[in-house]
Amino acid sequence: MNYPNGNKKKATHASSSNNQKQSFSNRGMRLEDDINQTNAYYLAKDIAVIHKKPTPVQIVNVDYPKRSAAVIKEAYFKQASTTDYNGIYKGHYIDFEAKETKNKHSFPLNNFHDHQIEHLKSVDDHGGIGFIVVRFNQLDRTFYLPAMKLFSCWERQYKDGGRKSIPLHVFENEGIEVPVGYPAIVDYISVIDQLFFK
Amino acid sequence: MNYPNGNKKKATHASSSNNQKQSFSNRGMRLEDDINQTNAYYLAKDIAVIHKKPTPVQIVNVDYPKRSAAVIKEAYFKQASTTDYNGIYKGHYIDFEAKETKNKHSFPLNNFHDHQIEHLKSVDDHGGIGFIVVRFNQLDRTFYLPAMKLFSCWERQYKDGGRKSIPLHVFENEGIEVPVGYPAIVDYISVIDQLFFK
Image (tube, rainbow over the protein chains, first blue to last red):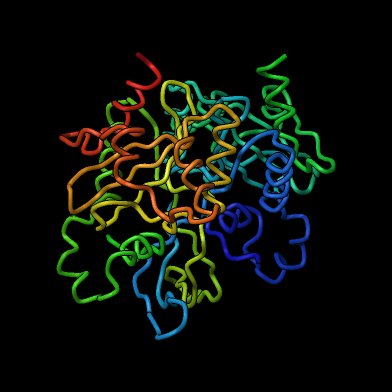
C-alpha cells in the first residue's frame, strides 16, 4: 500500500503545487518503492540488512473496540529526527536519506531539515557510511552523494548569496551515478563497494 | 508524549489482562522511556548514535484541511518487521529489542515474533551486535541477553515439551545485568564494552 509521506510530498512540491498535474506525472516518482524492493533483494540474497524506518506519526486518539483491532482516530505526521534508511553491510553501519525531484538542474536543499543533517554528521563521526540518494525524475538519473559533500552544500547556503540547492554538476562530479537495473533496482551497494571495498 | 505501543501492550498482557489494575501498577513500566533517555545521553555525549524506530502504523485515511496540518483519521498498528532500536557504536552496528515483564521467574517468548528473531539472526550473520534488553519490573532488574542466547531459547520452544519462556536463571547466567543509574539510566553500552571492547 502507498500511504502519504510527508517528506515525499515536500520533495515533489518543489516543482509542482498542482495536485491534478502531480497525479498524472506521478508515474516516475517511485524512488521509495524502488529502494524498498532493492533492500528486499539485498536481504533475500543475504547481501545487506537495510530497512526503511516507519513514517513517524504523533498519535493523539486511539479507539479500542471490543473484539477487534485498535483504531487510531487522530494522528499527525511528525518530522523525522533521523534519516529514512539504515542497516548493516559487510559489518559496517549504513545510513542514508533518499529524495527525488522534478527539477532538471538542481536539487533544493529544503528537502532536508537540520535534524537530518545533524544525524548524518553524527553517523560520519562514529565511522558509519552516510550518504544521500537523489533521483532527478525528468532526467531519469539517480545519484549517490557522500554525506560529506552534502555538508559543504548545506553550510554554503547560509553564506551571503549562498545557493539554496545542489546543482546537478555537483552530483555528476562529486557523487556517483547509481546503476539502475534488475533485480537490484537502485544498486547503491555497488557504489559503496566501489567507494570503500575496492 | 506517551502514545499506545502495540508491543508494549502485548508485553504487559502476559501478566495482567485487567486494565484497571494495569494502570495503577504501571509506574514501574518505563523501560522504553528509560532507554530513550539513555540514548539521548549517549548522543549528547557523542558516545553512540542509537534511536528508537517510530511505531509502524498502517495509514488508511488522511484529511488535508486547508491552511492546517494533515490529520490522519484512520490508521492501524502494524507488526514491526525489525527490532525497535538500532544505530552505531564505535563503528559497529548495534541492534536490539527491549521488553519488560511483571513476571518474576521467567520471560514469555510470545513477546517476540518470528520477524524479529529472523532480523536479529541477519544482524548477527552480518557482523552486527544484536541483543535484547529485558526488565523484570517486580524484581527491578534489567538484563542484556546476546541474540545468540535468545535463538537457542526460541528454537527450544518448538521441541516436545519445550518451554515457552526464558527462565530468569538464563538471564542471570548467560546474560549480563545492566547497570541502572544516572545519567545513563539503562547503561547497555557499558555491557557492550565489557563483552566486546575489553
